[in-house]
Length: 315
Image 1: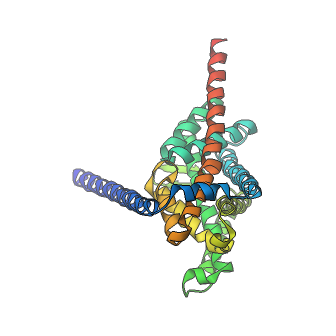
Image 2 (image 1 turned 120 degrees about the vertical axis):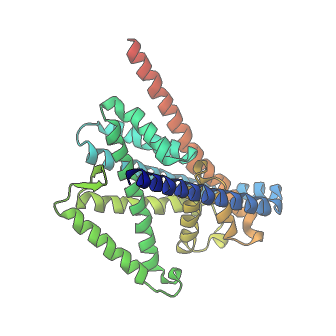
Image 3 (image 1 turned 90 degrees about the vertical axis):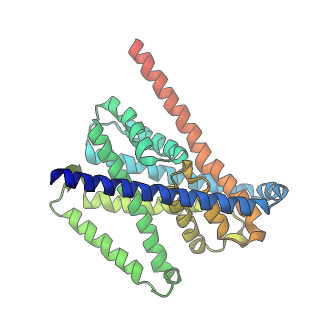
């Protein structure tokens, strides 16, 4: 009987993994097809000209929005580490670990693997165990999900046409779910158990702060790209927000480094062919500002950390 159950569970795990790989392959394949189709119809001179026409003050605003977004992402780790191992990790290390991990994971993809490995490499120097690092990763993922849900909720309430005939009801449902979550956290719940895994949960006040931070983070991330698009193409911020969120989700599901390919394909697909050269120019500038800039800073910082660590060992 036990052997049969194990075989059944093993078969289910293999089936789920196969479905995941098939979905990833379908998204990556579809993205590659669309990018080849879209870019093949463009003249690269038009893309270069579009990059040159991006106003400098728009670039400055995009960089400022990027800094706000990355500050919020770093704050996720500060909250998560303090929830799991309160008072154990200095604030400077929490900030460094959060920024470094998010910046490198954003570029490499496979957040569950790279994020866990990097956080363990950094936080273990402060005596944080591997299970506690896994709990930190889970809470950071939870905070990111709250941010997505918070922005979606605001969009549905402010722009009910997004829901295609449902009006503001989906937004109201999300508000109710947020209220139920915060009420549950306000009760005597300091730990969540899922099978054999348990993790501390944030207080209602901490969760509320993380929801607010998540909303700010998503708005800033959207603004980073929005500022780089010409005003006559981007439309209103609320019109562009669902395009960006959908492209980000496609990139996450694709598991490609930084969501590259899927993010660009879905964004380009949202605009007519005559505007895609300008959209591609904005996408390239966005990748430099939001992706490569933080990656370079994080890589230099992580390299300095490793050199300093080895020098201390030798001393």
